[in-house]
Amino acid sequence: MLPLRCSYSHLGCRRHCFVSPRKTFDTVASLIERELLKIQSKAMKSDPSHVQDMATQSSKVERETVCEGKAKVVYNSGQVFYNKAQAFNRDLSVLILNYFVSTCLNEMEQDKKLHNARLLSFKRVVDDKQKTCKYAQWKLDSTIGKNPVDHFSVFEAFSATGLRAIRYAAEVPHLFPIIANDMDQASYETIQQSLSLNASVQDKVFANLGEATEVMYKHRFGPSQLDIIDLDPYGTAAPFVDAAMQSIKNRGLLCVTSTDMRSLAGVQGGICFARYGSVPCTWPKAYRNEVGLRILLSFLQQTASRYGKYVEPLVAVFVDFYVRVFVRVYESGLQSQRAIQQQAYVYACNSCPSFFLQPLGAIKNFGEANEKVVCAKGPPVEGACPYCHSQLSLYGPIYTGAIFQQNVVEQLLHQLENDPKWSYLPCKERLKGFLTVLSRECADIPLFVDCNDMSKLLRTSPPPQASIREVLRKRGYRVSTSHFRPTALKTDAPFELIWDIMRIWVQKNGLNNIKPHDTASRILATEPVHISPEEIDFDIRKDVFNTCHSVTRYPTLEKHHGPGKRASGKRKMDPNKLPGQDLEDEL
Image (cartoon, rainbow, N blue to C red; front, side, top):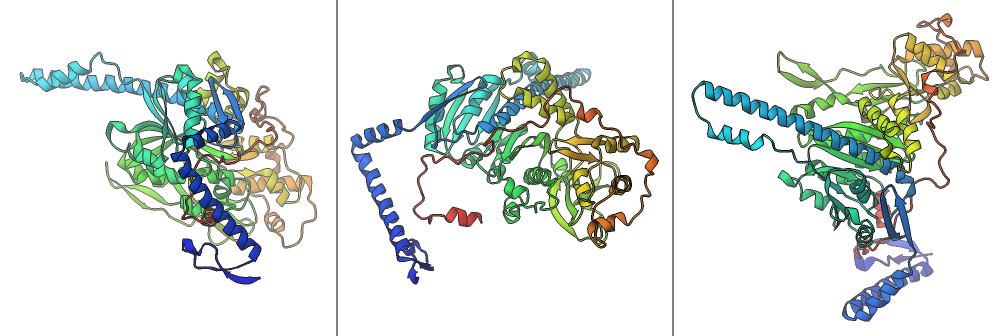
């Protein structure tokens, strides 16, 4: 092997690479091929016959037709991205957008009544003082009897086939206009073709060829702001959140999907910090998906706070291989400062599942209508884990508020079960099971424990989940399962009590092969003091959480169910970028 000059030196590379002559020859050949493609593209512009030849070649590309919900789309496989696994995502989005539209219409009606009542009271005051106020009278006459604006604008930043935008138009009322955007020429053409197959929504959906952030930045001010923004990119949504926060209306709905769980869930911690400004969880593995979801919510809140806004999650969930969040965005400088109460770091033990939250800040009141953000007190524990005496790791910051609103989930579940208009949804049965689990989850309790993991650590068989939940409930603590994991135990009970229950279980059930100085021996060295064995009935096998009336709560997924392959599209390669440079930047 000889040190040869890099083949990309004419593009600015100054490296001396140890490459084989054969590899150098292949690289030069690829550069020559690229130059020939440029010459061919110029010839195409000058000679129309080349365009016809290209059209003939494109017709040979395999075209597929997809019918989902009330929409029908056609696309070229390989050129345009489509993932069947995201049908659940789209069904859930349709449900929540229906809820959002009906809620906004009710809010606008209430605002109109309140506004008119204020004008009436102002007019009475003016009349009592025998004064005239033509402006007030004109304002009053112009508002009474007028309907509020009954349509909501939608911007889908990464439309690909246009399927989601077409489903929104066909299945959710009062949405107009719906902008189906994509920066890829192949996707733009596909959206136009799909619209021709859905005549009923052609006057609602508009295809747009453009870069997502550029389009959103053009809608930052005034009436051009958007009511609903849907970000569902291939990978992370982090680069697009700033533009979305600036271009969304007050009380608007921001929908975000992130499929980069390798970074959010701790595999690529450096990339997570670069994108979201947080350190992800690497241990324990049980709740790292929830940490990833709460990191995304924390990032959304911090971005909103920069513009005097705050977010309120309607529904934020982890599904299969991605996280999907629906948040309402409000304008309030005061609430954007108070949001610091919902940000915290996580101290997690390196050997056992114990964790402790360290808030970033607190609100201190100095008299009536006078409050100030102050530093939170800490740390929550001193030095090491109080149960196994191991070192602690620091993750975060994460969002510690409720990840969904209980009344919203219950309304969605009620509509799905009782309203026949939703019978057409492709994933209706799975949605029912998912929302059933969600409706019984304690949304405002951050993270959870897994008694199976605790049993594995203590070298014993796992205790019945129902018996532990019953003990904690009798003690007055809140307890539930979680959609993140079938064996999850969400509770506000202290770890002292949970570990005592596990110690009593070990005394009753026995243990296997514990070494003198390992983690299990250090935990079991302490006798139970917060609960007695007589208070626990380990014979309880069922409770409200494992009787769901024949609803499939955690379904078995189909084969190859996961993130799809990135589409090739018709994007032009940047000649100033080296092959593989995107991967180098990523790593």
